[in-house]
Length: 320
Ligand code: AVI
Image (cartoon, rainbow, N blue to C red; front, side, top):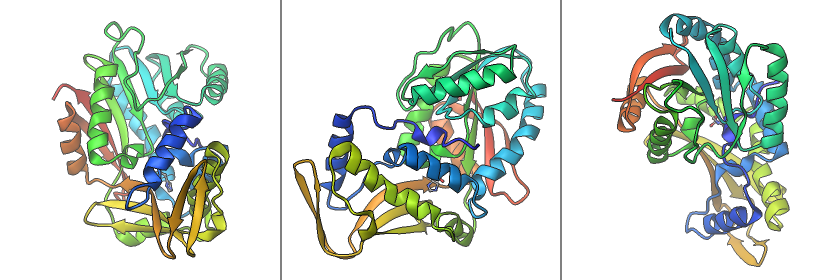
């Protein structure tokens, strides 16, 4: 099963935080909701389904690239390293690296969803008996203290182009924190979705089966449950498009009618056609991404693109 991996980065910490962030987002002139709230258990299942869709190329493209990349890494990385996966989820992609990198003796997977992470780690232990696995239950978007930071060098792993769900400013901040967490001499292997023909992007976020639409609307049901809301999913349409000026897919929910929605003690009025901005998914040319990474103190060592240049995996080294 593919993982609803890293994107569940900083899912619900406390209901208070969720309520505060939801109220803040819906109080803006242009209403918005944090995309991390897609990932309750139904949302994680929808995301797993998205990864299996014919139209959603990022997951399968990166997955197909990883064995070759791992093979190259086995020549590039000679020293012993801990691997640190950010937003590890079900630990699906890491297997493809571990199979080719026997010099990796320890894995530090970071994820906010503790039970899920511990189960996935137990399963992985059965497959890779030589491997020490130390699950770290934490919000990887914050600074995370890693064991033996300056004793054993680290290889960070951040697949899936989850970096694209941050704004460019947030992406630089994340990359900067990751560099400091990983310590001196760190490497980071990171998957980044590329800029491409808008039709390909449009299809990927407007699939025929309507799974992405369900995924998008489910954020409302999640909010109803966790923050005492009364959203009716059926009164909102999924709308996703590529914004070439910003270089990103934007996902929105559009109110089908004039309505008032209650969340706890707060009321939010929607006019017919009004939108809630639920997600950005930024796309970067390899050059644009390397410029961004450089701002956070990383330099590019090597990059891998698939034949159709749909997806790029970068190997970065700490210290510009
Ligand atoms: C998790 N993240 C990289 C996905 C993306 O493509 O931005 C989330 C997603 N949203 C709609 N489909 C998939």
